[in-house]
Image 1: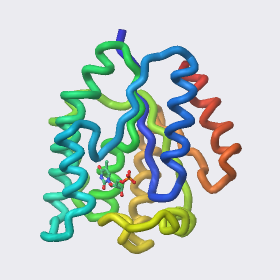
Image 2: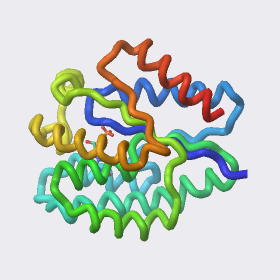
Image 3: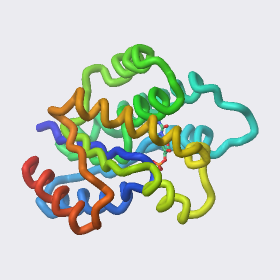
Length: 205
Ligand code: TMP
């Protein structure tokens, strides 16, 4: 039996990490085997690509190179971790996935959507998340929360209008792929957000 594949998305500071743990807890409590993973990253080599794309400042990373690094890591992650886990019947919860590429490299950096779709088709080979939870909030709120966390990576240094474009691209995808997306208003209190997440995961269980 195939496991289910859930992805969590949103701009910085919307509470992704806290809510990822919450969602994982609900799935484990229901008795399912679970892999919790993240992108960029998720395998030893893909984690090295994450370090390069988020933290190396010694060379410019053009938007196309950034896009290709994201999909290189994803290709390793899918082949070496995500697909094997799903094939063994494990559920997978992933902190960001390809919708982040459409949002950040597409909306944020202006890479053409058809280029991203071509890479998606090659790398996914038909696989899509069963559920994508988009934690949505105004970038002003998110960036204020994220800024309090300490040193910034290459994305966190971007300005608010970059995150406005990222958010708009996420919302456009949620509308286009409404069958797998759930948009959660992350500007509310944590208990309110988690009530909604509980309903959404229970429905899937
Ligand atoms: P995170 O640890 O906050 O998820 O940081 C990862 C950063 O990488 C975040 O700013 C979004 C960015 N990112 C992309 O630009 N494209 C992608 O495809 C993914 C998965 C993440």
